[in-house]
Amino acid sequence: MAAAQVPPERAVPAPAAPAVARPPRSAVVLPRGAPARVPTPPSARVALSTASTYPESTASAFEMAARLGYDGVEIMVWTDPVSQDSEALRRLVDYHGIPILAIHAPCLLLTQRVWGTDPWAKLVRARTVAETLGAPTVVVHPPFRWQRDYAREFVTGIERMAGETAVRFAVENMFPLRARGREVSAYAPDWSPVEDDYAHVTLDLSHTSVSRSDPIALAGVLGERLVHVHMADGLGSAKDEHLVPGRGTQPCAELLELLAVGSFDGTIVVEINTRRAESRAQREADLAEALAFTRLHFAAPSAAGLHHTYG
Figure 1 (cartoon, rainbow, N blue to C red):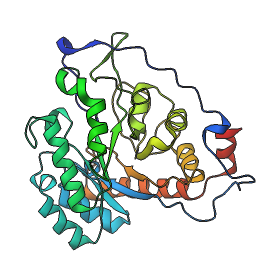
Figure 2 (cartoon, helix red, strand yellow):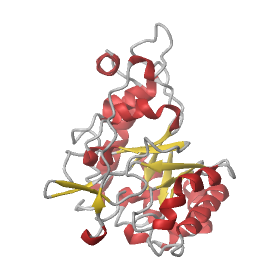
Figure 3 (cartoon, one colour):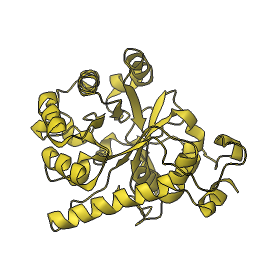
Figure 4 (cartoon, rainbow, N blue to C red):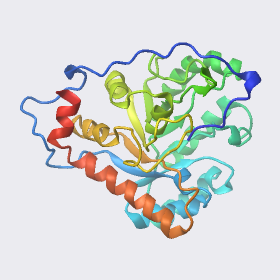
């Protein structure tokens, strides 16, 4: 999920966001005569981000994910000691019988001192935890602009680390910050991963809402580089909302249908904000609704959705 805003004195004008057009029909290859509906579900699994249950614990997230029928979890490494401890995580995997499908490295402002302060050491440790627990993906944010040395070497460093392991480092799309009619970027080399040479990318739909980007167009441009999706929604405000999919203005259903038709085999992670839930029952209802929405639209794309995407 997104970090807090960059302090005003740190902010610098953002470069113009790359123009991203809706992909042509050829951007996603469909078999000739492809049906309007996919008869069997694609192979991608639907996971629950432990950030979705905050302020409840990592252990609580495992319990809810297993009981609600998620295929796995994504671990947001934060101040909860369990999220930082591979042995504690392994015990949760064994107890609940649910795998860890991704590790979200501690990239947020509130996790700047989790696993130390060296950003490269954090990624090495995230990779080690992922390898130890069998998670195929480490999610990482681009550097903050004030992390100058880290930002300078980030693209080549991620490429180098990716060549040392089977774990995928999936760089997440972020967003510019808007204030008083201006846009500033807290991230370098950019908040958008499109123009940089990352082998693997995470697409977050709450972040596309804030950046006012078209996630369907981004998916087409990214092609096979898109291996991880954070499923959420937003209303296009300057706030990173992480709504239950279907409650905002993002084309969540259309993107899921596009991925299903393209036989997407990465991981789809429900990453929503339930902090305002008044009870455990309300939190679980939101998590169940998000899972049902994701499975419905990922498993059975509609003719209308295909026409919207390719027509």
